[in-house]
Image 1 (tube, each protein chain N blue to C red):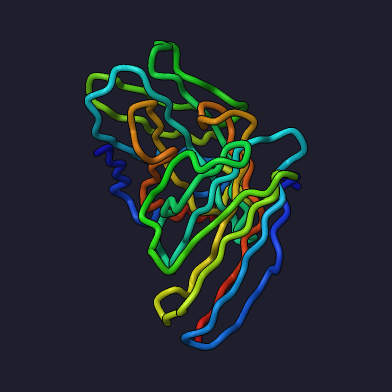
Image 2: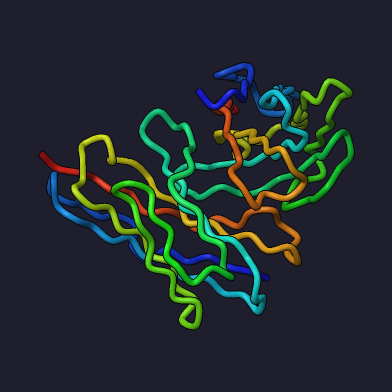
Length: 114
Length: 115
């Protein structure tokens, strides 16, 4: 158990819908990272927050947005969903603003868009 | 932009044998960090080993060790005495302070340990 929690574990929804994925980092970690892992693909970095502020942005679609709240939990919002958005979405956390040490990954949310 | 290449999509090894997974990367930086992450069938991403580029000594963690060749931009992972529990996807990852992406991952190598 990494100490990072993600909810829900599984999500099935239809095209055009909007979903919210939630992540709680390890106690004491200030950074939250979001990744997308499509079938047989590596992890694609989406976005990072550090202590409530956006720190880095990857190939995140405009239909996707995220935020980190004062209690440091984070939410990833996916809207106007398309079939291609079906993937495993990981959240990771680290104590610092840069991942020079270990990132602790959550168990992931499996999103299926039908 | 930094890139990470894992040229072996799949590998297999007999239990108790040794296997080496390859990773090459492209960067113009001199200071950076390299990682190997393991993703077993449970899908949980777990850090296996970490190497700081300014350290010449290769990192080791129990049965896991790396061969870090900075000039060749190569970072291979050696697993000794392979165990069934080592069956997983292995991802090589790169970080540098100058990059836009916190971690750049390779596409992974699927390792199967055979009894």
